[in-house]
Each structure stands twice: as structure tokens, then as C-alpha cells.
Length: 273
Image (cartoon, rainbow, N blue to C red; front, side, top):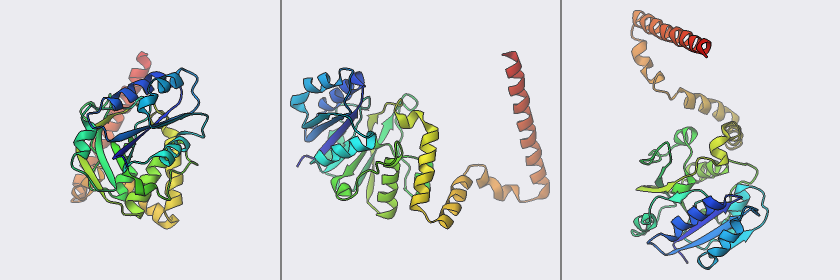
């Protein structure tokens, strides 16, 4: 059994696929297997896969039912202790990533590394400790995560969702199944922000709401949304605002003036254009 199964999903992103595979095959740690699930690309992706075929444990190029169907196809072929999903266009940050993570033989169910992007070049770590509120406010980066194979024994990704199924899976594992996890001080991935979950925020929010309704009883859901929205820096100052009525009026006046100023500024700016 290999230590890591790196599953790469691709559809018509030949250049991204090539860069992703090159970043994997450059790793100094070699106890891994590469699995490529291509959705029947017509842009030369298949030829790239064939060029690397001697280094890929399993690959297929055929139409699929979306990214989670493709990820599940990869999972069914994987034989590693941990699974990582480094899809086309996503890159391992440097050649020592896997070595830095697995030299110490971790045992936790989920390993969370850091991810980098154009907006966050120095890397972003997932918050700790992880609670339901953490998951409500943020979405773990699957490119920077490693999930133990046992999590998928009888529980694959829900293919009824287009872009939020991995978020649902993390909630089920970390909250309802109480899986163990560890944070790694390693930038694992530089991820491609042109993916569907990055550019279709409206669909993502709709699917999140559907998932929360599915997982939480209605009465808990209502309170949970309220608590999640209430967890803001301004509302944390409420005890200070409530000390005296005069102080409340002062804060109200300042806030109202700032809102008015912003509205006037935006209107004037619009007229200039």
C-alpha cells in the first residue's frame, strides 16, 4: 500500500494538467501513486496523460457526471493510506511537500496543510480549533488536505451537489463523526482560482444552505444561522456600546455620518463616470 494517492481530475485543461503532474512527479518523496480522471477532454489532455502513462498508476478519459463523480471514480481506484485531490491547474508548492508531511508518519484522519494563491502568496492556514462555526465561516481547501482512506470506506462524496460536496464531507467527518485532525505548518498547494467553486459564488451559497438544512434540524438551523451571522468584530463590541445611553448615541451618530459620507462619495463618483 502506498502512503499517498494523489487524485487529479481534469476536463479540457491540458496546460493545467501538465503543470499539475509535473509538480507531482518532481516530489522528492516517492511513496505515492498518481490517479488521473479525465472527463473525455478534447483539447489534447489525453495525449499529455499518455506521455506520462508510465508514471500514472491509473487513468481514464471518458465522460463523467461532474467533479464529485470524477473524484469518487478516483477514490475507487486508490490504494494509498491518505488521499489528496490535486486537480488540474493546482500545484504542489515545492518538491519537498510530501516528504515534509509524511516523514513523521502521521496517523490523524485528516491533515490540513496551508494553501497559497495569487491573493495569498505566503500561504493560508485553516483555523484551529475546528468547530461547526469554523466550518460555517470557511471552507477547507481540499488541495491542501490529506484524508485517510478509512473515511471513504462507506462514505463517498455526494454527487447531487456541483461544488459544495467536499464542504459537506468535511462537516460530516469533523462534526458528526468526530474524526481526528492535525494542522501542518507546510504550504502544500498553490491552487487554481478559476475553478467552478471559486467563480460561482451564488451556486456555492445555495448549495451550502441546502446542505445545512439537510444536516441540521430546523430549530437548530435557525439558531445556528443567527449565531454565525452574529460572530462579527462589530457585534463583539456590543457590551461596550451598552454602557451608557450617551455613548450609544455618540457611536450611532458617528456610524450614521460615515454611512452618509460613503453614500455621497459613491454617488459623486458615479456622476464623474
